[in-house]
Length: 137
Ligand SMILES: [Zn+2]
Image (tube, rainbow, N blue to C red; front, side, top):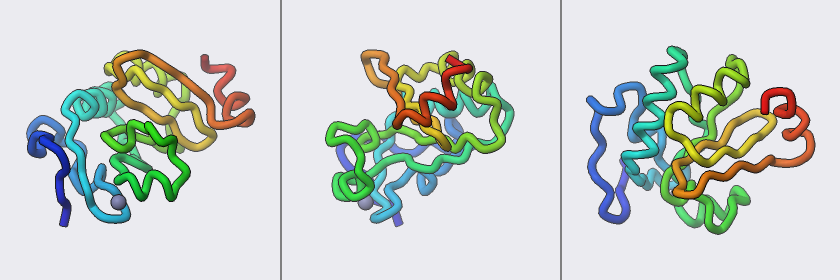
């Protein structure tokens, strides 16, 4: 089962048809955080790509975020998505993510972190990630 923290709105299956609450819940405890703007961007990205998106990480409770080495102020403690890169063209994925309303981009070797932070930002998870993305950026 899942529990919802804060005053987040309920899950809307009609609004986010390609995803499920379980899919974005914290894997250690099932805690969830429904952030409509982030989910709207994710759904728009899914529609634009017309291809499945594997969400490696969605919401994390504070304990899980610490355990996996997440930044203390990581937006995963609210709602962010680490999307698996396998099967995607990186340039296409990034262009679609930008067009879909995401403003935070974390470039990894095997995943792309996406969130809807107020101030746009981007970063790399190490030098090898930077090398993988250099030709795309
Ligand atoms: Zn948890």
